[in-house]
Amino acid sequence: MNRWSWWDATLFLRRLLYHVLVSFIINPLLSGILILLLSIISFVLTAVFQPFKSSKAHIFALIIDGILVFISALRCITGYSEAALVSVGLGDGTRVLINESLELVEDISLMVMVLIALIAIAAKVIGMLKEKCRHRRCCRKY
Image (cartoon, rainbow, N blue to C red; front, side):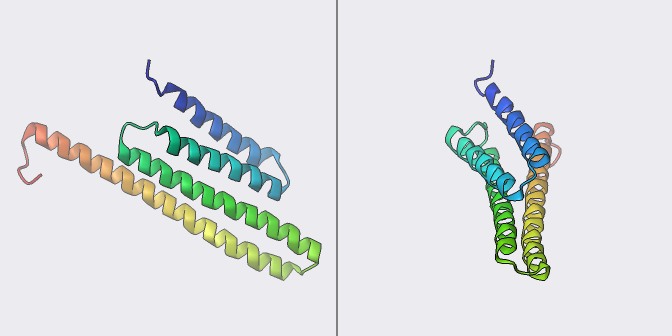
């Protein structure tokens, strides 16, 4: 049995908790804080235990977890700014402007995460093709 088989269970549990927090907690500030805590715990566990065989996979996981922490922090700021603006009595226009700005940063962060994932997949495919080519000795330039 693999000594890191428990890591798969933690990934499934993390995914389940994300869905529960997003689906069942109505208060955006509370939801944002809990998701931020879950993201930080996930980042720290990945950094401490280093459950991946490859150092590249470990760095990739830390980058993705770091982006999730960043997006979760933005959710907290969005929830907090919404609550603060309501309590101060500022108009809807100010709230909409702040929330749209934060949503734009979240969208850009998600696009960066997708771009990093695509680059990692492309690098893996190219590595597999190079390895296959070396075994067949079909291409000399690799």
